[in-house]
Image (tube, rainbow over all chains, first blue to last red; front, side):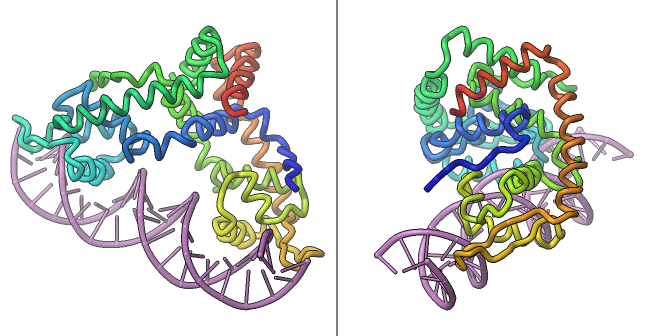
Length: 140
Length: 140
DNA sequence: TATTGTTATACTCTATAACTATA
DNA sequence: TATAGTTATAGAGTATAACAATA
């Protein structure tokens, strides 16, 4: 049967435990939000909060190369969730959610809220707050 | 310049913050341990703690398909860090660290310990303990 | 019949280098 | 000269389906 493997030095490592927790958190989420990955939904949230943001600034914000952003925006534009509009500086594309993009995002945010409650269900409100605070110290 | 993007609904989400923290934790680690990714080093730790473990059980432990494990073990065997030995059940390969694998793992563990101190440097011992505990509640 | 390792294949996400148009 | 977007290309990392050997 399935006697668990010995974990060796892993369990005490913050990096390892962060990865485990992150994998656990995203396990059922990935396929659950309108066929978009967590990263893609994150982009919709950022575009929604920063209408007209350029591809390069969006790439910076999520620490990706700007060439990577091209295909990602192609994909979102192909789904009619995002549109590019040429900026005053004609080198740039400003990004905007379409009406469909805003509608999908609204639905996604409801799913995300459900999901958040599910993964936080093992924590009290105080523990959840404390966890966010401690994670902030590491990410900052 | 670089006025930060508005983050919209993201900052309050555990899943998002877990991902940020995990990315921050692994940013400089990935390329730093003997040319092996964190995941690969994790496998060496698991094999070391479970000598003779089969490919399938190792795949289960890290939630990957067993077909994925074939190439991974090929890679580690190609670097002479791991060896396959046919088991009593002749369908199976038992996995073992080579002498070189154990030596590399020992070096890697020292690097990992340094790294752990670096990412935990913003936390007190009590905070670090508390964070591991809270992460455990989510992953369990 | 079921399991283990394997192969062939394909998909996703990412980066680097070089190009163009604009500034 | 420098920047924004783009293209071509490549490399990880992963999965699914089918197969042979073995249980």
